[in-house]
Length: 143
Image 1 (cartoon, rainbow, N blue to C red):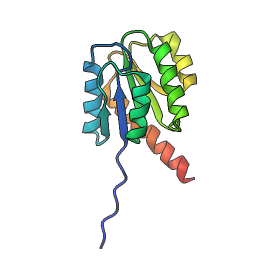
Image 2: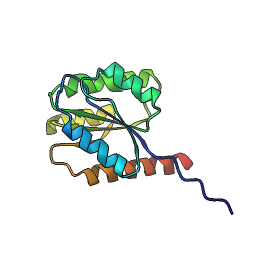
Image 3: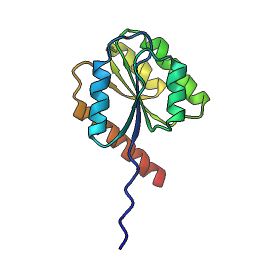
């Protein structure tokens, strides 16, 4: 009797675009996702949009999570999404975390960010959100 083939784990890129020097939250998120069985690639601090998009392609990730505290999200996030599209990687689930004012969320949603998680967000909620979104995408792809 053969064992059923396990589904591939969700591959997540966690990145800190811009000049943020603080990455504790991103590391907590990366650990929570790893603990939930996801494969996590953490790029570290001070990543350019080009570096993030290239890593997403090279690592063939399913999810790109951007963490930002500097307030530069409205400059950096659109550039990341533009580069992902240029590289043919616009099918990834986009999530964001950090200091993001409520008034910026609708524009980020328009860019394709499905989940925005601010300070104090529960990592279990984030993990469940990613799992649910990826399951829905898989179900939709299977028709």
